[in-house]
Length: 316
Image: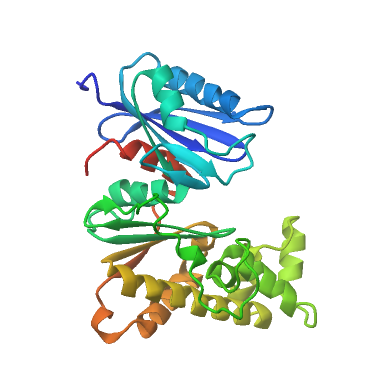
């Protein structure tokens, strides 16, 4: 039998979709819904959609709480999303206050990278670790840190923004307006951009692979071409792995984790990525840190935000 208060709803709020799921006390997903955010004109409308989804997905079961993962800058202590999504009027939105007053249950709000980190720690590839660094390499670089079994948030809940550590001040401009952030050297976007620059003067199988798939060139095509020993792709991936490892070595020196979990689209490259990335990171860390951590591929895939948001209410 389930305890009457053991149900939790996790919400993963994206720029175009809202996902909601009901979980029991063991973290088993019982029910889920997906809704588009298109058509919402105000922040209040988006919040009302989420409240409707919570009521629908829980089907009358009493809830212990609602965990919500939101993109952008989030002050988790106050439950306010400060900015950072393309949702309407999405600045300084007091999600916690609005939703608690409607639902009558506790609402916890975290940044989506922190939710993913916590999900991996509680239910995924970080399970059993004590100090974990989670990094997602996709369009940009997201990260979340678990220290001594607790999510590291910092004064304003902004801790762990590893993608904007500057690793080369003479590097290209980042979306944040500064120069040489880790993100401009090691994200999926960086892989694509580096390949495109090289292909201005050289031919590559990358073009043909993208054309065959009917897509614009992306990092997956570069990895596919690398597997076929395409010289441009091999160069791009080797250089990217070097920069990925620099950032990960910095994280090892800063947080001394026993586990690093890698997620995001780039991680799907699997064996084309991980052996070389492990080797390069180990090469770059200082001697006392060698062999002190393992590096794993994320285990939860697309549900990581939902699972992590809900897991905010479950002790490990």
